[in-house]
Image (cartoon, rainbow, N blue to C red; front, side):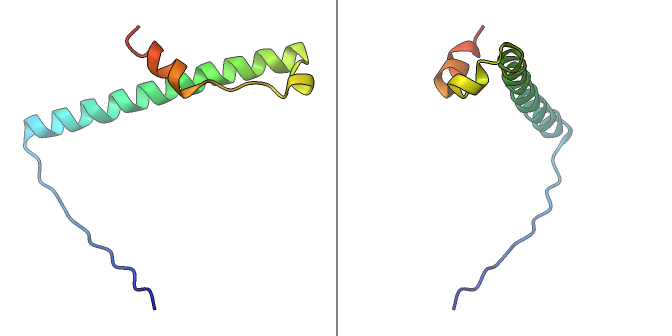
Length: 71
């Protein structure tokens, strides 16, 4: 028999830690939304050209997105 356990923790960060947490979450959200927007633009282009039906489209490559991050 498998028993699943869960623990809840509450943290009380200092003001400096809270600022760092907010920056980290904000940066992650920006990167996710940036590449999601790029994928949506690419999908819209393929739908307009009707090549999506023939080639079944193409998605952004993980490694291509990693290379673009520093830029």
